[in-house]
Image (cartoon, rainbow, N blue to C red; front, top):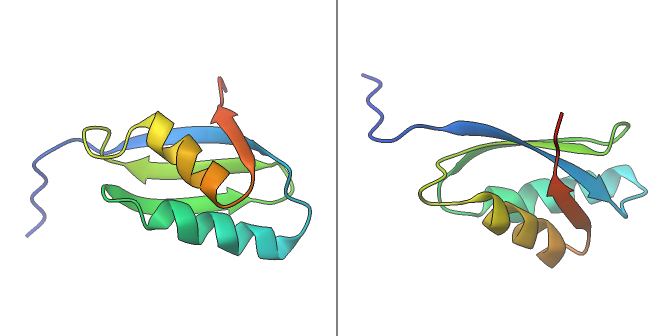
Length: 79
């Protein structure tokens, strides 16, 4: 039974400041801890972070703040 009470959205962030594959795990772990986040994928080569989340629980600002807390810079991507 797959019942969802609120919509999950897919958000793309552009990241800056990570230079090694271990940075990927730090970002995925930090963002993945947020309530409402169901999936996080960091693309090292393209500096993209893809996040599936419930925007009523974890908004884009929360995602950006989690990346910042991990020690990196991110901003919402327009593409």
